[in-house]
Image (cartoon, rainbow over all chains, first blue to last red; front, side, top):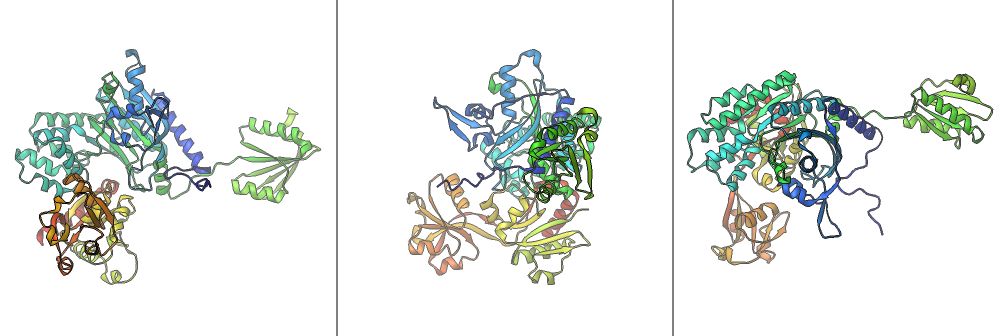
Length: 421
Length: 213
């Protein structure tokens, strides 16, 4: 029956024409960006042992539907994420001289659709990680690189929003919330449900300063000036430490010259998974979901036997490009060859020579045996966006059709490629 | 400046919301609302409204084609989407409840693997599985849920209860209350940050009106 043979599985897509060309170009530009910052490219397998992801404690990773069983009965899974494999590599394959490791990657990841449909289950992540240093400078470097990555894609109106996981965790300790209640209120704060947060605090005994902070947490977001406001709300030394650290980070980002793209949200406590300190996400118009995410994950490498601090980010390339096309209101530029060379069978070798010479000049040249009439070739070339047709016939005569102006130029092989023949 | 787009649930909730927005300083001609137009634009204030099926409002907002939306808490619970839920608008108040024949009062826990008919399968499952820690058989219906226990399709139902009149007329009673329901203002997570100033202003304007009322 093979009735599914015409379709893609849900969340998987074919990427064609300008979409594919532009995506590869974007990935390549991002590669150059990371290389110029001294990062080293790594490639890890698409298939990993499930244990790698289970160890991370990441629910997103564990809920992946793409699991297989190998010949020994072990569970394999398609990678849902590139950070966890990067942490595994750094922890198991690197020597101390290699640290801090500065990795970058670009590759396909696979997940259950995160939101209820319409989201891709196969998508490309491009990102970078710094593993083996807890220096705040590196948090700054990751965030400024994230800004550069957004710009590299071509986006100009966007925000990178900073959060701090420790701030929320400390508040939960101070309020003596158990794990279950912390998770409940985390969801409420993450959805800025003031009403729900208020309800949850009813009848709970806690310090009035802590209560005020928790109640306000969903509202504590905005420009960096807000940090001062929050400082005025607490006397707890650990919370103040978090604020000091954020202030210093903002100074570093100022030095990087990326301040204008930065905002802060203390209520950003979405799916913490393996994140431990400063976290961030990037968003822009035209896309209702974040297109970039990252942060510090100081405990992840320990799960692979070598405790060390780390930070990183990854950009959803497909989502970022969709946002770009929507923001700029244009569809991606089509890639096309510059010219197509059509030849009669007897002129095959001449045509190859012409093609070689033109490619040598840096042009992209397609070859096609003259099997159709010229009108059909014109239609084909126009549809593909090819600008010229070069027809080579057996006596060395050449007709050049300029599809833009509609003119035809008659020449021959000698004058076209000069002394080369 | 970019348009602020607000998704409204067709019907009574939309009218109440527009009234509130008007008081909070956003104008919209009510004559236009009565027409069958799906999209209403205010070019002066750069606000755009559109009318959607109530249960679809969270979808439009999650995807960011609407920056804000108004939707019942019942729909939010059933859909569980990635949104900011910033304001309890108070109107459209009712309760989510487990209902059934009066003879089951106090005996609900005695029925193992009970069949629950509902328009809200997720809400029903979350309540019985996560709160009451028991397995149930959920039967999804699209309306007239009260019929199910009467004809023996299910033992009980999970539904919203406003006045309780429909239940009473069919000899059903509320057996357990799940939670209170009312209309909520929801905001797309990206819009909240990218259009921060305007949305904050709007929320605080609405909150002020609600506090005064």
